[in-house]
Image (cartoon, rainbow over all chains, first blue to last red; front, side, top):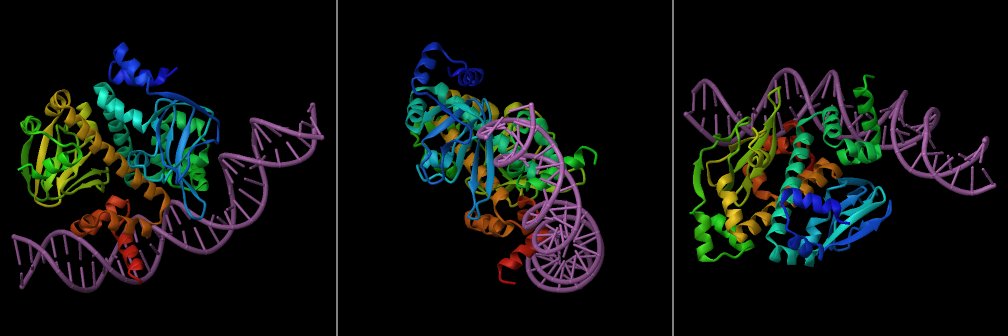
Length: 192
Length: 192
DNA sequence: CGTTTGCTTGAATTCTGTCAAAGCAGGTGG
DNA sequence: CCACCTGCTTTGACAGAATTCAAGCAAACG
């Protein structure tokens, strides 16, 4: 229980027994099934979810009904609508499960308390978000500077599990492409 | 001196006199001229720069010599190659000044010390990076889900000063477009 | 005043999206 | 066990959009 979360935490910020007990008291476990919503656009996002097991995605839906995937989250990643979480404004993203999943949930209230009471928690959060920030900057860099072929091969190298576990039309959406275009890129890469 | 930095800090995390003195002891001021480098690809990034005055950009250069702007930083923003800064690996980004600028510089050593000694500094950094993370997520969302017209008008609304102060071929680079394409988008938007 | 820099425009080319259809599993119910 | 869905991927033809290359023009600068 909370195994991966503890591992993620402890490898960045080594934890004493007592501090872990304090933190654990603010966590809760949630299981959701494939295709089930964790958050719907318009609701206020009250939790950050850390993925113990499974796979989720966050995405927007345009007026014409088209979906655009903003993020995937597999084991060891967190997912949330951070803006809604911090401001309590209505969420602009939807989040649902791509696979049956197990999540460690941290509410805004719990997070605020932990930030006051536990320097380790504050350090962990800082490191986690800094890592996420760097990853987003890399993604943007790839988007504006590389060809589609190079972006896709880079994605495979960086996140092989995502490419294996997630349907390709979702990868296309994540890259801002149509499924047809991604299919053609893959053919070009596999040597006609 | 350090006015904007103090303001940015104090509005997020109110500071006592003594704590500000502690922090101020770790800051230094740097002035750089337009077109001057703050960081070159391959060097290790030893500072995070907070912009007191002026405008900078970070960008990559491809083998063919084409530049791709990853970020702009105006007054109140920070800029750095965070990955290089944290790992001491060679930087993958270049940073230079678009206007004559004044910067508040924080070295890695100073930042580490402050993170240990000042809970307020840790809180400030967490809030700053969280805000930057959310901004990047918005940018990615716009990139994969909106038309070029909507992306450009969104940019004008969100960062009017950037669009006014930065040459348009740099805006085009930032959006991942050629200058010609951006010029045509602007004509379409101004009603032929 | 000449040069540089940035923005615009045009025509040809290349790439991507759209629409329609077909192929290909995996899963379900009969 | 098989036939039939259903969801996903691939393919083709065509229309639309962006890039490329070339040229022209205006403003800024030394």
